[in-house]
Image (cartoon, rainbow, N blue to C red; front, side, top):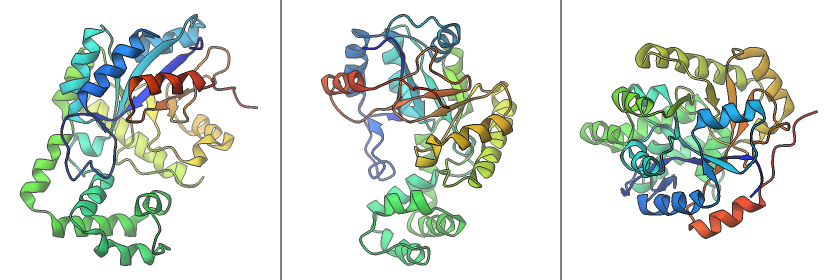
Length: 305
């Protein structure tokens, strides 16, 4: 492995299979995650997010180091991932969305998964067609690249019609609440800002709306957790995130103490990293031997002109 900081990005760690997560495909069984951790601990020094960041800033990455980061704030992370990592004496990081954390609005992608599992997409397709959808297109991909207020309103309306109040209330079990996140923070976990509602950034003008999502989320986290965040984690991995003008917009509009976190499957290496950027590696549901082979092929971020 290269002398760099590898940051692995997971989402939920859980035994549960349900209609909300089935079509999203971002949940790992605890035994597979435990296998990953065991194999990785033989190849890397496992470190917390804060330790990795401090070493990166100081230029003290003299061996392969690795951290674990979990997006969206699922309860399975505290229930299953935290004890597994605790056995290795390492803390992870969790990126939370304030809308989910505070029970303001349920994740729109999970609503879409629910509709897929209850044959509800046929009611959504007419709305999508009005926004450019064509028969045969992937609804998963189309909604990521064309999401707007009309589409989200349509998803919400159909979800309300096809789910019961009891189902909707029970669905909140999937996401952590304030107490759960405080427990992770007390164990040394880094809590990061993942925007309010986890909507994708589609083009340059949208950066300013997502910037508002970051700022609003930050205000809520400070109010309810009692502390702010260092890392602002972009939702989804879309092509625009790779462009230089996005980074310049971030540097111009974000507070000076914030670090933007991308998901471009690159390594963080001292001397090749911009001051206010981090890169993470999206982990697929594969066995540990294949994961290690994949990590060996990755390259460090080379910097920008």
